[in-house]
Image (cartoon, rainbow, N blue to C red; front, side, top):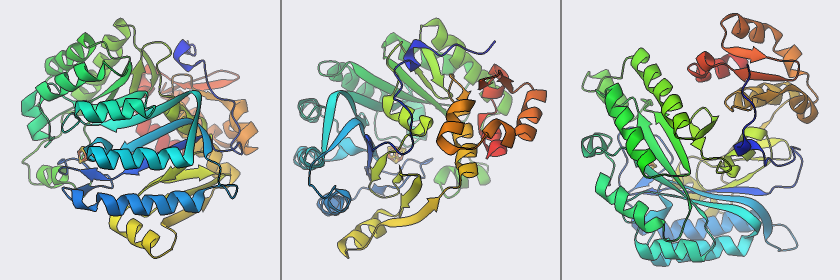
Length: 395
Ligand code: SF4
């Protein structure tokens, strides 16, 4: 039987790709150090560049501001990175003031900051809370210092626990990021990580399998045999353990990697997954506005230089055809437990995606990776293990 749309998914926004933008992402590309597995658009250990980044960001925000100069009203604002909380108190203040000049939040809006446990002082936490930030996504990754060191994270397990305790004074909506399928990790070790996370009773948990991206130190180490990826079957077992352990604790899975207590889902991510428009700023940031997707240059230096020269930081622009958009929405939608609503995709794209994808869907049905009803298509439990492969087939 298909899973019922959970309570966590009940408060979805009305869907229309040409609605005005009500969601914004801002990429803050600073980190203390580049973790061995990271291929994000970041600058490591160059804090002196923050003022230059803030000036460039202001230029980008000003260029996109409406002609009437009024701040954009938002349902969700998400500040990610990088490590936005690495900025000094003074720099963080400047960033928050800049954002407040261009964006106003509707009552009940979701305002998220990504954070890492290191250099996230009480003063910074208070500053965020005072500015209206009401959701923190904390990069804990592991509670085992040996693995934190292997991942080249800049914090210890104890630091994560301390910061979490402090955060509770100001925030209730806290998400923990955890990584599994670490080199040499056992199923028992991952289950212990999950148990430790659940003991902290966070309303939201995101879990990701470690990936070896080309160009990262981990990619090179694996090629030399210094690091070994985990056996695929063990990785699948860890994923299955995640589903069962978190479900037992009352956490609803609402997307392949995301779990929450009822009503604590990330509303910002829902915008991406539903196909609603969103604005984005900063190096490597991608926006989807009026049916067009644009992506900024992913090098923070090129992004800054272009803005300083009065040029656009946009590196690529795609006007997706209805067919491309339908395929994309189908692939993204399948990652969610609520599945893909065929009529909704047709409404947005004017394309009958189920007919367009008939051959692919029949092949996925034959492998029992999807379940199809007259209105929806869902991944089966087995299909969830192959979500990335299924997305490639659909797109
Ligand atoms: S903290 Fe996150 S963004 Fe920064 S280097 Fe590590 S993985 Fe990348």
